[in-house]
Amino acid sequence: MRTFNLFINNDFVKSADDSTFQSIDPAKNEPIAELSKATIQDVNKAVRAARNAFDSGIWKGIDGDQRADLMLKAAYIMKKRLKENRISA
Image 1 (cartoon, rainbow, N blue to C red):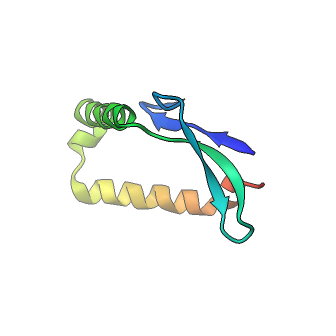
Image 2: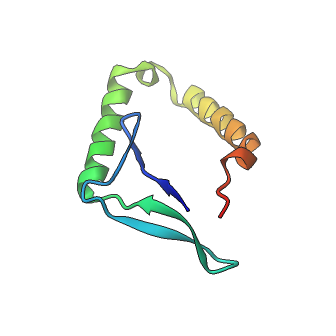
Image 3: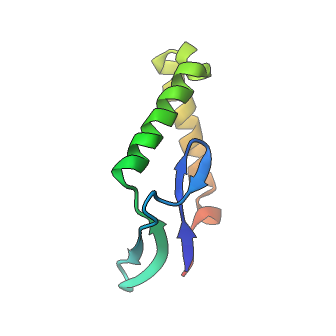
């Protein structure tokens, strides 16, 4: 079974208290992945990292319509690559 950590500040990290939970395949009622379970500290750390990245980076100078276009483009690319990102049990 694959394990997935939190993605915070451009890095994959375990949760602050090292807790996890299993993602269950509803069709088979079997676990398919172990996921890090975010704590309040993890969420606050992620929000601070996102705020800092926004305030110091290129996003700050891009208007909302341009950001939306870029996000839609990213979603399109992720959708095209869905098969290679699937979790197999």
